[in-house]
Image (cartoon, rainbow over all chains, first blue to last red; front, top):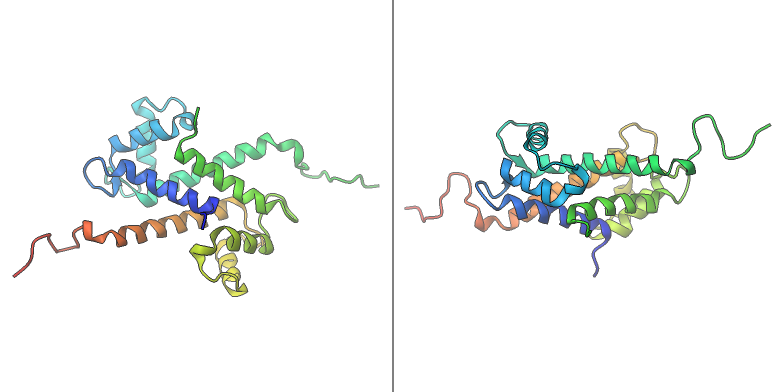
Length: 110
Length: 110
């Protein structure tokens, strides 16, 4: 049986997290260094110039809800969800010509 | 440039949502019928026997935070995030032999 796109997407998220989380310290969370590696290598083109430490620090501080200096899988998924929603919004903006604007309908009324 | 796994995962989530949301009514939300089709066709093996309407109703009621009978992209991403966290937990449980349990060490006691 072939995995669906959604099943593949879930597997990729899980696999990518553990590829980096397993490198040092707690195998099941991302340290600051592991998070930085993941952001630069896997999301470089989305996050732009995230090679600078300031951007990584900002993402880490936003993500690390329980302030333990580590990002767990749930915190990582919240980041990915927020990024995906942002990408989708961008995609809809871009296709805005297809979408009737407020107060405008496809048919002419009179 | 080749997309990373995370970029592909984000694209798959966006593409799959719009494949179903575009079928009827509002092109940018899933109706009950569209959600059911998506669940059965794309997540059948995860959600088990979700062919019965009761399961679809339950997911719809849980997801539809603003009670408009439609699931928007953000609500869909919350479902996918929750499912991915559940899968990851399952995967860690399964690999539990690698991980010492609370208050238990790798050595034999007594």
